Length: 532
Ligand code: C2O
Ligand code: CU
Ligand code: CU
Image 1 (cartoon, helix red, strand yellow):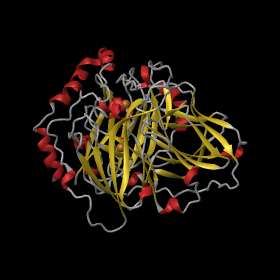
Image 2: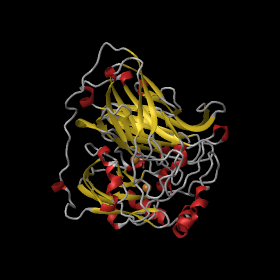
Image 3: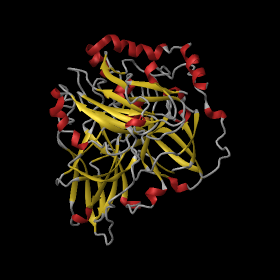
Image 4: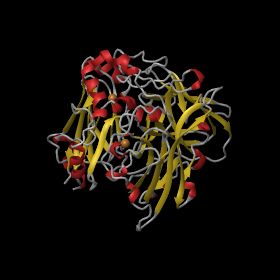
């Protein structure tokens, strides 16, 4: 009912302003790239106005407290501009989030230690969560999306719920996700990329009974790292110029908002959670001493049992959890985490920055600076995976198939993003299991795309590579993390994938898009509608 109202209301008010930039792109083709490269709005500049009369139900009218059965937590969150020291000399202008607990245990909101990123919001499975979000940016509209969390449509941070400066949006949802590393970031139409670049990214760590009963490292030994790349201009300001075709590439790697990041650790085992919060850059992570990467978790939490890999690949939006026992190293050791070489990524566009995507470079350093008397062994089993079954999929004989294509800009399902538009093949029934297929067959204009779905986590069941692209694929694929629940999945050029996904009873519009944020902003995003 409600979705329909929004659909018809919107269709009477096509947003000319938003449409025109994409229409330009549609007709412009590659020739417009250099022009477009200069189009990224400067931070704080009022270039992009929120759509007029968006069909937004401003949730201010809903109360923050409602009687609920069971544990609940209430949090105030806001975003605002500030300046922080990143490089020596002049401070850098950024935009960031801050939060505090208004109902419940105050320690559930924590700062990212020493970082302007964050904060970290800690939730428990089953908890009724109310987040009152205030936009304190001076000029820009924005909305927050909880990446990886399966929440009702109105709490999902769809761009049509963007709020103006000084407005408040109230999110209410029950945590139904497994324990895992989720994150949050802005999701306004067309400016997600620049807002994330400006520093808006935080963590939402979910815990549950199963995880709490496992002998895993906790507290100081369970550490999150958000990896990003940036380019800085004179006076240390962030350079927002990116090429929409390939996405934004910086020439400096930042971890938790800092360059040359070092983490001092004890000689014992750690649970390391990595989030790729970069706009476009994918990392092929490996230890400099060649020791294996021990994968214990993916986007949707812990995997069944730890797996040793030569390296692990993490595309924009993805998370991985790695087990590392530093008791193998003498105190004083500096162990680097590196990006390892790969190819076939951006065919013909590999030299996109001074820090070429597929070259070897340092991400961060772990410095073992103290002896530890206690340690923990890696559990053999972490969870029991609830594998979805192909035969349960309602469309098992006819997978929903979404192509990636090029038409002056990257497209999904052969159409640009429309604020509340859905095509016939984008309508899903609630309480069903489905097979979805994505194909990245775009001929000579071939680059890799990380595809992300809002809503449920899914399980990758099949990957196929076209022969001419096999060589590059072989330098990446051993680092895929298809052993666990995922919400973001990388497709190399020439690759196609199928995944199984189970929708619950939440109805409404949910997004799927490329998590190269410049692609998303330029329209490589679509809705799917869950409707009974
Ligand atoms: Cu992390 Cu719709 O995005
Ligand atoms: Cu998401
Ligand atoms: Cu893309």
